[in-house]
Amino acid sequence: MSHHLLTRHRRHVIVLSLAGVIFWLNTQWIIPSASLQTPTPTDDGHACVSCHKSIVQTHLRTAHYLSSTPARANTIKGSFRNGRNRYVYNDHMEVNMEKKNGVFLQTALFNGSLYESEAFDIVIGWRKGQSYLYWDNNRLFQLPVSWYAPTDSWCNSPGYPTNIIYFNKQVPGQCMECHAAAANLYTDNNGAVTYDRNTIVLGIGCGRCHGDPARHIAWHTTHPADSLIGKFIINARHLTRQQRLDACALCHSGFRKPLQPSFTFQVGDTLDKFSEPNYDTAATATLDVHGNQYGLLTSSKCFIRSSALDCSSCHNVHVDETGKMETYSQRCITCHTGKDQPSCASPAIRQMKEVNNCIDCHMPVLPSNKIILQINGSSAPVHDLVRTHRVAIYPEISEAWLKAHGH
Image (cartoon, rainbow, N blue to C red; front, top):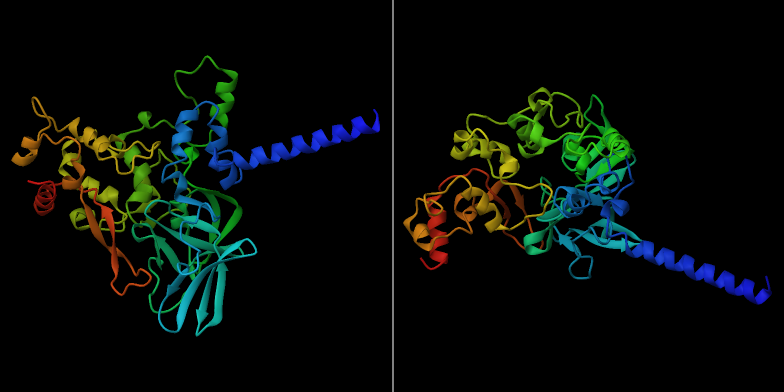
């Protein structure tokens, strides 16, 4: 090959290589699991997408899948811009959100001097707000400042004081159990929790509810005609009502008293063998709206009267349906239907023939008395607003809704 041809060949190789790198960088957003975490046998972004592409693609946009992610510029929603990157406790203490040498940091200052600085390592939450975790060797701790979506502001992290900077709130296994798909951890006699960092799979992926897909994939790869029944995989349709409820109650029934180590419960198990309710199950109507959707739902008349109702009756966990009142209301109407139209006790609603929003009256957004935040720059505490899952009649709220809609 002549020198000219060799030079041109090398140039083509370099151009193609650069094009490949650019293509790879610009396609990482297509399958977030490829960039957000190391592939594992239970990593649905890789294992399930070949056969269940549409379900995987919609699931990757859900709050479940995005319940934890690595801390990066595209996953941290709080602002790092000057003027919006400070959380001020008082005249002496503040925390600045900053980026140095490619690392995002929460840097605490006391009387203008450095007090402590820790990195954003893991993002918890996506839609309503975010809290952040940092690694100290093999232990996880919560950073003192979080982000609150309704005001797009920094705030104190839930459970943290508002008058002193504190970095030492460790993250127990129960927290990660509800925000990650898998992790190996150890809790010593003093309550200190250490994690095997190589085993953490962030986000709630397919494998968390359907089990390890390895045998399932191996079987159906070698038996492509056997497609009517998914083998070696958990299908919710084949579970009992209580098994389906337990799968959700693991994380949606508040903090429970553990009987077994975190991450040992599997969908299909009996939850009460792994943890016990940490609330009075006979007084569920008094529960705070934050955290215990299971307890609130099971206190509802529609749940008590229906032997078939469970979480999946209203929620499609594979799709982000945030704010789609009409979609949820149509699911209410499957049971609450009169002879010719949806039934409702309110004459005004019957006159309006309102079928697009049962939710705001019967499952209203209510202030939590457990999650109370101090927004940066505000002296008044803010109660987090959470939609109650106790389906009921709320006369004052319904009256306010009607008034707001001209009735």
